[in-house]
Image 1 (tube, rainbow, N blue to C red):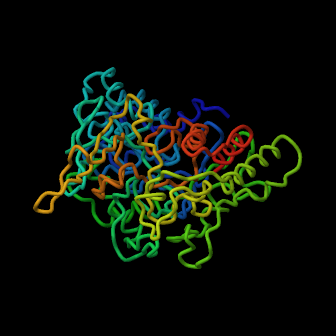
Image 2 (image 1 turned 90 degrees about the horizontal axis):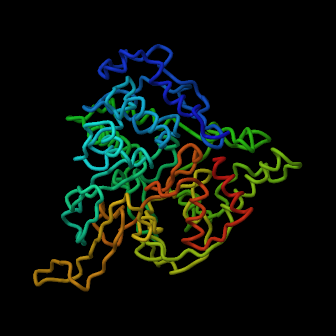
Image 3 (image 1 turned 90 degrees about the vertical axis):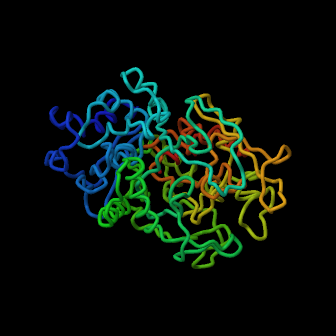
Length: 503
């Protein structure tokens, strides 16, 4: 199926099912929801450009009265404002645009807080943006409207070993006190696979629950549950501007809701039902997928010590020998794409976090042969199974588009008499659209590093990468061809796209 009004109408059903008088008042509370909008059934299919995705919850249904959907802040925002079930639990531009039109850019409130995404603290391109008219709002919110990007404001840490020496911000706001970082909201589903919380890992805390092996730096971290509990409050006080922390029961309720969800594509316009003919597509099979920190790590599984296997995905193994044309040929294409993802070898080089500026001891080679699963190593999920932020060049100045700020950062490499270091004319410089992990760690070596996301439910949530720079899955494959010379072209490229959209 094609992207159509159907996808938009489903998300807008939250709005249109509510009486007009409720749309004019966002302080109705939980009781404002009609009885039939108190929950969604497990497996409700939401359309996307190539089929349908659905979500299952361990509780048996999606509880729309959970704190995830409640107004716990001061600006009408809820978690659902930026994490819609109809968009793979993130946001997509077509639905954001429809909500903008329905709410006149957030002026008309709604009982579920969908229009509250249009708030200037981080929904607009600048906190100082003019939102006085409809036309002004359309311009002010252009990044969220066109790419589904939220503005994250983070400053350079006082203890950083680098400084911000130049800013080119088309919205005339960013400074060393608060850089404007435009990022895609990560899906709040399939969290059982998480090893890192947030693109830059800022909600991943040190602790004693799990540790990297010594050969990968030996750093130790708190549990993902601890991270998510903190993140639920941080998001409410930040995005929703709550003046006070939310309670521990409220935090735990949000985390319990999120961690009970699985989401995946269930129907593809070419391959049809993705759990048919012994395949294990769709969200239900995800519940049975094993995961623990360090599973199938590149240097060996942390628990079993089994060597790394590049055969990370086996969801569609049973489709590899289907006979005949039509749907069966489409299913063979998905299986071939899975094999390409697992086994297509190409040269990995120039990646900070792998080839250099990495925790590996001894260091990895400056160039080596790998596959997609070298980094996407978590079985049937595709994220990295340990904390391992990488810089694959997505934020490089060469990839900047005119709507993105550009930041020039210089390392402090000149030692003064008292032992402190300052930047000097000969010190290294990097120019990027987003410093990534460096704004959390304060390390020049971490500039441009981000985590790799969970890959299930991809078809529901274009555009891709942290900055929305890939409009579709074809553009994702093209990036890797350009960056790494992966050579995935022609029929092989088509097959890989077919596999990715079936996740």
